[in-house]
Length: 577
Image (cartoon, rainbow, N blue to C red; front, side, top):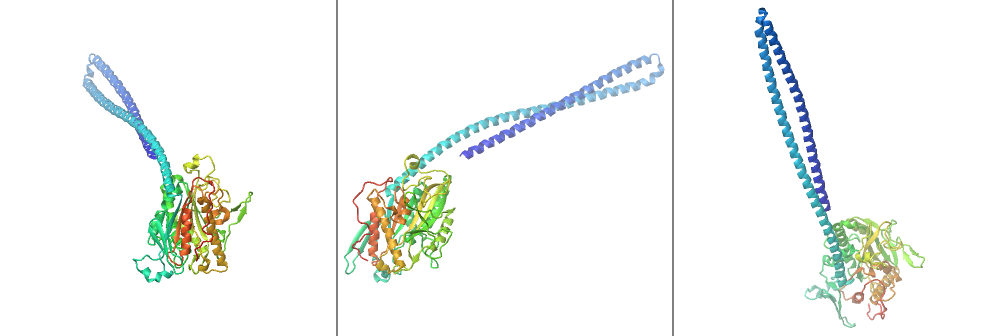
């Protein structure tokens, strides 16, 4: 609206200048006509003088003729000639006088026309000036109206942000969804005749409704299992990727509002975590086909939705930087480092000790991206470097936790209302404007302010060593994976019990995810479970982990009063593999 009011003002000023130039041209024409009229008056005066001279000459000649006529009769023959000349002169004078009068009348008419045109031009200029003043008044009114509308829009935007955050908090800052994958050809139950009967639910894990999971298993020589778990959302085997992503979209709105967001896939090896987060894996490579595809995972869909939301609100001038790391054997490996890896081991982020003797991780490489295609291409180039290994459970088991971080930065602070109003230290889950330490994973570049971070986490699968059949270095990998998942459970358990100390530094995984596990960050945990009877122990462990996560009630940053400790989900349990 200000741009439209400015264009009207410039148009009216140009019109007024054009009318002024026309009035000036008319006035110059009037001056020319007046000059021409003066010249004609001079010529008329000259002709009148010449006529007077002719009359006096004729009179003088007549008198001379009369004088000569009396004494000299011999001059009589010349008198008629002189009389004829005098008559001719009188006729010429009459013609000259008539032509002079005609010229005078013509000049006077031209002068009157010029004066009329000048008067009309002045009147039009006055009208245009009045119209210009009216348009300027209207433009000022529109500009004031625009300012009022803009102020109301900013107020409504803040209200929308607060209401959206309240809605997200009502659903839970930490939400747990459960996804049951269908039976696949490599499952033993796939060829079971009972699984071919559509009237009989396949597997031992079933979605009772959108919020309830039932685990029902009756194995010989094992106790009967009949347990139900409730979560915010439960996806059955037939639920599509689009349905899953539909529950992720509101979190991306919170991301643009300035809140850290983490989407984390948790579960056993081979239960569909990478499929949910990244999409189906192509047969030729380990990289999912990220072109137009109905089975796209959360990561490519989130990248497209993120840039769509940014394009709808260009006033924030947000930039997106991407870092991709894997936590392998409790080491953070940078998959975007220049020294590319050709094997499982690769560029390790150096750990350093601060003056306070706290172990910190140097920031990983951050690459700026300008579109969803750049985001996806960057991830596609890094995924083949992820550590993988074939086990008895899965032919392409991920041996590391993959963390894709999209950091939103802005040229100037534009945080949420709580950021601008709170005089105290920033919350854990909300980024501190310009306060990220140089060693933190999300440290920003100079002259930039971190707006928020989106972390997409594809955790390595929890495994039972007896089932996976790994030995040697693969066994070390499995133990490291289980220890880091146990550390994650300990952190969430400390948060749910509101302990004074939260053990983020017990694992590189929890240390790296500290910003999105505490405070008012938005965390979505997607439990991926297998319906197979063979994996029922890990399924129960996974669902128990989700039930513990649901107990976490986060508010403002800071630990609450200590509560009685509960045994960790990864402590010894009566469930056997």
